[in-house]
Amino acid sequence: MFNSKIALRTLLFSLLATGLMIGGCKKDEETVQENITRVQVHLTGANGFDQEFEWSDPDGGDASNATVETIVIPASAGTNIHCHLHVYDDTKTPVEDLTEEIEAESDVHLFVFNVTGANIGVAYDDTDSNGKKVGIESLWTKGAASTGSINIKLYHEPTDKDNLSAPGGEVDFDVDFPVTVL
Image (tube, rainbow, N blue to C red; front, side, top):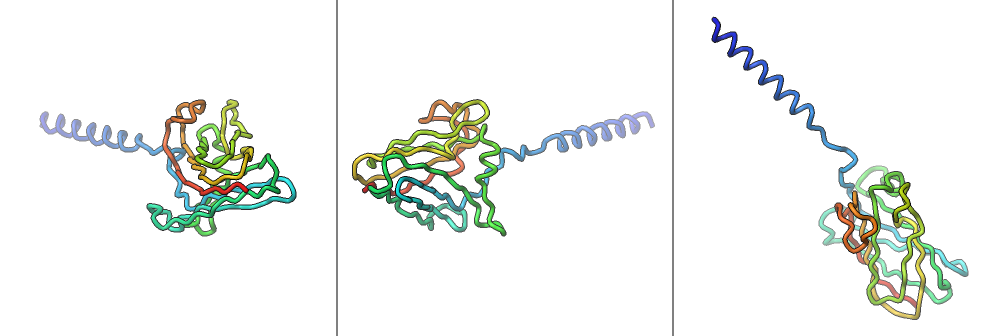
């Protein structure tokens, strides 16, 4: 009788401890990586220049079927071009615009730009609540006619927003746009 009481207590304690461990291990919903299927670069400049260029991966898979538009910046657009990025998940109905969520969580997001070949300089035009770069808004300075590419990465939970070459965190997307500066 005594051994069965001890065995029952041990069993109940083990079940209770297991239940607490399972119940206590909840996922942090804020760190769930979004399904990004479309990135839109919206550029505006002088003389009515207002164009949108898209990278799209409709199924949100491995990007092997992704399409990308060449960013063309005409001479008439002036030297200073304003850029606003939009990020979408087209697999949802209705389409989910993730841009507002990224803006709301700007402390844990960072866009990084890497220009190769094209005569474009990129300066951040927005900051988070800590005064650190975000990159949804940027100012592009156009130089001489050229061709090249611009790589845009979105980092989630970067560990060092001041180190643009290695900010840490997870990469939510990594896309390359061909660029032509006229």
